[in-house]
Image 1 (cartoon, helix red, strand yellow):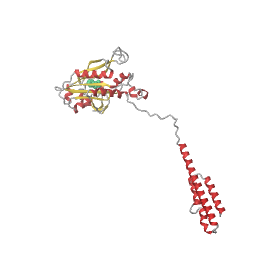
Image 2 (cartoon, helix red, strand yellow):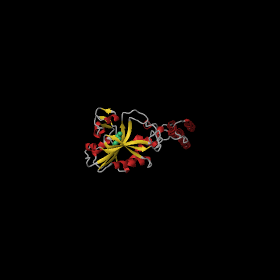
Image 3 (cartoon, protein in one colour):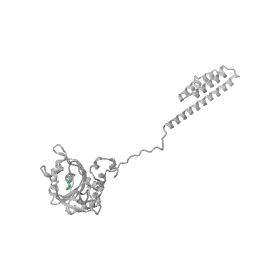
Image 4 (cartoon, protein in one colour):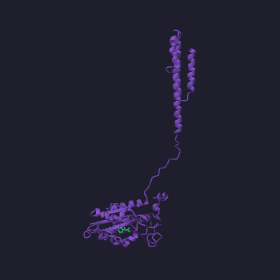
Length: 339
Ligand code: PHE
């Protein structure tokens, strides 16, 4: 019987040493030490031994049992350790690899200039408003004193959506919406996208941007218009910049002016940017036409006001010395990343 026990010991340890997985080891444990395992069977036969043999065989059987249990525990530990090593190896991170750089977005140059412009007017007490890009004929033309047959419509042909809806040609539509909804005093600017059926070239685009300004109160005069716009120009272009007001015509303002600034490129001497005139036109303005005030239910005998429309694209291209307006719309990152 002692030989048999030693045989079991040898078989079991041999099986453990070739086991690859925890399941293999478990199978060995069940085969030798399980309820019906081979060593267990031997121990069950102890009763058949003589009293002299029993303690000797019993001791040996117990020793073998312990040895097998220890071999099983060791083998399980080794297998776990090996699995862990394999996993660590597979998940190894090469910390010398260059990292992935996350790109941080920036503001579009139009938005940088717009934000500056908003800051300037907000500091002068203006609110910032908004209007729809798809406008009715009434708000874009009719209420601005441009009836259906008015020649001023020729210069502002646009994209029509049916008879009555169009893509707005000017942010001036916001003047009407503002005056309909607010009683004076009014001080508001409305930035936005406008549309005209224009050919695309270095200075024209069918989609561009304006910022409309409107002030209505008692006793507003042309002096307020000039002072406000001069202040604005000096903050945007620097206090050395000269401002020139030229008489002009807009159906919704009377009198009307066009405002030029001394060319920021050549300082007024004349260059290709200002087409040798020394001046660059940046906005149209004027005293709100009494008819327009009346249309909006504001009594022109009591109130007066001025309005202006700044071309944001022109402001941006002159400020950053951008030679072609198309660069503002192409979204080429090599261009945009410079701001
Ligand atoms: N809306 C005019 C244009 O687009 C500009 C303007 C605005 C003129 C407000 C006077 C007052 O040409």
